[in-house]
Image 1 (cartoon, rainbow, N blue to C red):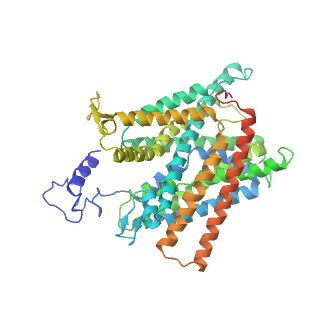
Image 2 (cartoon, rainbow, N blue to C red; image 1 turned 135 degrees about the horizontal axis):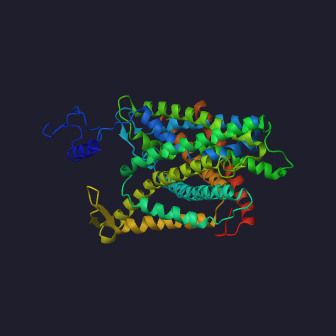
Length: 491
């Protein structure tokens, strides 16, 4: 950590004269004379590998667990095809987005630090507000989705132990509310960490956890296939008869949304690119990282989704590790579900911190005089070097945000459909529309040229998929609402 302290120290010196190097500053021995980037910020040190790791951490989330269900809706032909198709679309649009990190010259142009900055410098106007709105709405949705998912996993641990004790005689019904509330309390604590740079360790832990539970899901699938002795499932997916004709259509649409959502990382692409060192141009590094991470993710998803489908056939559950048909080996399922909970605690913070920062920046700009917003109270904490800066506005606003997401989660606990709506809602604008529009604006591609028409066709076909997926998920929620009573969910 000493390193970052030094770099910050230099950062202050060079805020105004980023081009001039001031030799009087004491240079730590491990720095050469270029410890400041062209924008006066500390030298970035990221590589293709760190960027790929960040993407994989962000992408391989609990979305993995609904893939077997998604493939079951589409079948052996359409399922994997759709997966490859989305992988390609995401890879392609992320290369377009990577070019938007710098405006003008790809090596020395002005940097855009966030997605909204990129939209501002390439498109401007109303679209900036729209982009911000969609991005922050999506983060809000993710927070709800994660609260629900973690409570389901906590209950799965409790239930698998209860089944084990009673030898399968006790149905072990329980309410999800206490689990959601305990997750909320944990998040209120973690949300008080003031800055994103102070939670890098959370991200590493989360990455390890997501590999843990995905691998366990994969292993259980393989074991189940071996036990069955055959590969289950059909070429066209769940058969009409098990579900009605209309249900089949809605569920296929929803499956598209789940798959699209499981891949998209455009929300944080530019933020990740801002950690990469140059030369070579950041966009080059980022394109390589996108290729590596999309490839790794696709292989992983194929394995998890297809194994889950092969193990359970058309009856594949919506969440591979909690809707399971088997309860043994129960300790292994417990480990997997505990890993999911730990991963979600970290992932919640990784997604919410940008939203927290945005609101706080906005509030302090709007009410600069307010002591409530700007005053930092220093509180010494034993075992920590620096005192903790308590800010009343931060305390109140972040806790309020967590409470709100927790209450909404208790109102609407249908995991799969929530995931589908989120995926559909964020997929088209953030992953396809803005990158394509910015690319057209930046490269000044002529209207009605072949390239322009191809890009627009890509954009419109993705829009149609998004609308279909949203409709499918809404249909799913309507179906759920017939059965559920708010706050009374039990499994």
